[in-house]
Image (cartoon, rainbow, N blue to C red; front, top):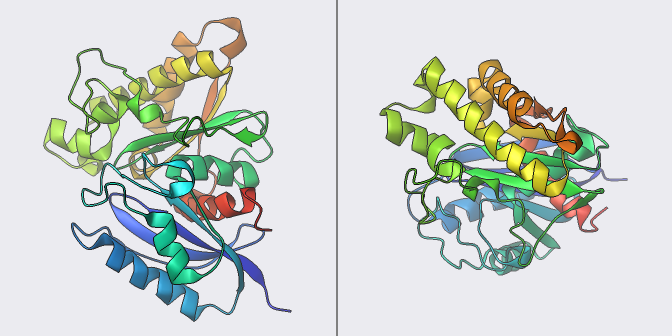
Length: 285
């Protein structure tokens, strides 16, 4: 009997990744390319076809994690960091290409689903997952279910205002978490890529993420967070210590006291496992 699995797609402002993930969460194969400035769909289509055609796994469905915002189920995607995608028909484009069940969600919602499935917060029923990368996104699992909201964008912590009258964000508002802590924002503020950030920048990034988590925790009755993304993982322990210090300082109301944060357990593979978890969560087993 052939092994069964998922075609997993991760779409971000920095990279496009496609892989095959087993039904138990193991990444069996993968490939990635830098996200181009133009012709993003053509690049993604070639990557998807390459992975699909090369595998002998019985693909039960395709899961996609993609930066938002988007309409429900990824019918129309307007990823802020892919300028040519405004109301891009992602789901129908993939459906026409693959002719299999397609399930799409925000990349941070995908990440938290993957981490609850087989990562750092396996089995937890109430947790927020955050991606701190080119942009900043979030997804919330409450009582064991992913929160969607009105049209699928629930949990988008990147556009919670953490600095009143702060920097202009790509969304058009001022002072958003993303405008101060994303990779692109850090580079715009400091003139250097996040990899060259000073200790002060790392600490301030963690402090602002912690500040946002306190607010979300109070609204959603949460006290657990898992964080991934190239900026967060690249900054490493000093970043996570700064997040935790802010949580310890500011999460004082009793029901969120003891709020803890941890890095993703699946490391750089978390986006692909998360994409597979989107398909798994929506019925492809």
